[in-house]
Amino acid sequence: GGVRAFRFEGQGRLVDVSGEVLPAAPTLSEEEVRRYQAYAEPVPILDVSRLWQVPVLRWVIESDPDAPLSDDPRYYNDWAYLHFGFLVWTGQRFELKDKVDRSRWPCRPVAEGKPACSDALDSRGDRFVTP
Image 1 (cartoon, rainbow, N blue to C red):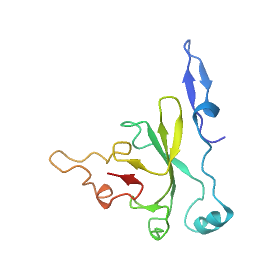
Image 2: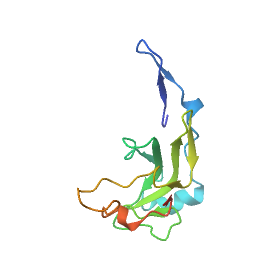
Image 3: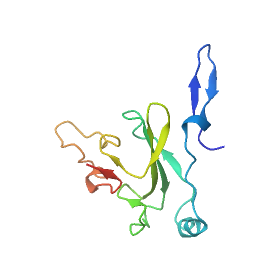
Image 4: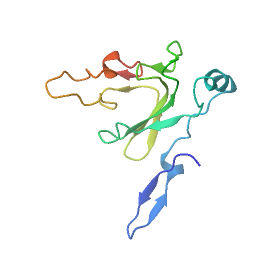
């Protein structure tokens, strides 16, 4: 179950390399499950929204946007998400990182003539992305 990774090895053959290239998915403590279950499905999912630009994914839990957990240490200013780490491709495998720099988690595209990172969500900053 969960996230899998495959390598194409020619002749249409895919080989499951999950154990070689993926660290274990984040798990929540019983206390975290109790804290989050009233607001969200307490299971981290992968945000793949930047994969078209960079080989980085992000473990998140989406909470209720009408009741964002803004005082939670995992909360970041992007809709109503809780952060559980980045999966950063090293060329050989994905490594779990708590923070990355902006080159590894770029801002969303903006209209021509608008400043970079001026999107309504990106302009708020992200405590897990450094300049």
